[in-house]
Image (cartoon, rainbow, N blue to C red; front, side, top):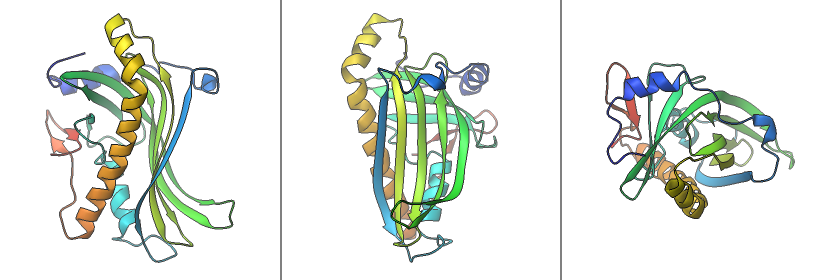
Length: 225
């Protein structure tokens, strides 16, 4: 827990690189685990493959850079030049005047076409991360940009499995127990609205937001101001 922003992002990212997962992925179907899913519309394209400059492509670029979060709730520090898969990220959650640094690691990149039960297909791109030691939560979060190639509908899909981690500080543990799930869903909904807003901004001719360089080297913070 901190009252000020991260002061040594490169050092903290180096420390995160040495951390392991804080949970066993094979246990997430057990008691105490939450399974969440949110779908949010981003726009409509012509049926078929995604358009080069349409909502799907714009959203994929923004999701790649973590340019969808509400920075009043969550931001992320990472090395911009690191490959997406395997990227270590220092998330900084905010609650009132408090800041909570939490490490995660991107474990998979999704880039595929899926068949749907209704006979249509979806073009999907996205990525997921898993939580590392010292995180307030345990689990995995998946961010996907999905286009129905039959209807042209483009959506942002967030899928998560999570539970509370062991929190040594009793005050923080109590606060997380009271406000954790509310804040979690607040983050999901805010992220979906922010991505929709930024996709619309780019499609209307605005510049695509990119993470802010904070240094040293290629360390950036997202979302940008």
